Length: 310
Ligand code: SF4
Image 1 (cartoon, helix red, strand yellow):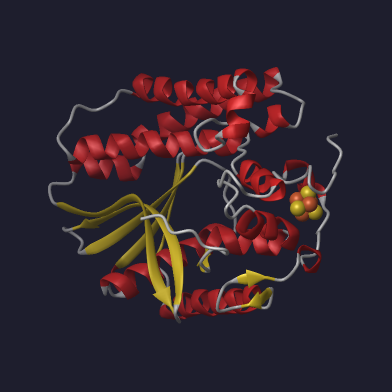
Image 2 (cartoon, rainbow, N blue to C red):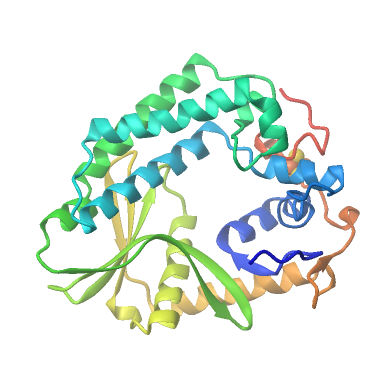
């Protein structure tokens, strides 16, 4: 049941941590100012932050739509339903992208009223629209990603393994660390019974990054804490859909402990920006420093910082 709260509940996630590191002001808009922005009577600055929080640029939207259609395909398989072809999946993602484009160009007024129900593309909201290059690169990326999905080690395993137990399929999961709710989104977790290993799969539609391994360490922490799975039985796998590369890791207890230390430090710094930690009431906006950088052009909240679109 929905309960009105003056301030949001405090929780931690890897994306919250990344936003906090990138720019404290962005963190304020995203995690505090947008709170209650869905309420009819909310002040305009909260409504605006809530709307802006929901903007998506084409690469983010494309990644979300690809994750969604892969999740549907895996559920189809697990529930014994007929499977999509590659063309079916491309058509479903394209439909999602087209809807976002139509919402952004024809239903702007609707989006202003209901930013969760309608979508707005960052590229259109901030005025430049979509260039032919951006459209053609999104199409190429979509085809590559889905083509590589069908050939991926994970999908082939799922189709061919005789015995497999599935734990999660793209569900939001929480666990508690030192009294704080921690959110993780696990794309897919299955047990390869023949090897006695749990495989944690993360589909990646972007480029490889050093962050990827750290993110997987949190997933291992979640599985070991919430499901009592020994660390040595967990295999972490990044499936890079743009290139078709599959990268596996087995982390040591030391790396998992380091992930926990990093999380504790991150939480400690975040709590330093609260006027009232018991209520999760933040300090005033001017205490959240702006970190102006070349990332401002892509920031959802750039109108609040009066960053001119280049
Ligand atoms: S526009 Fe730049 S300074 Fe302003 S919130 Fe975004 S990232 Fe921070």
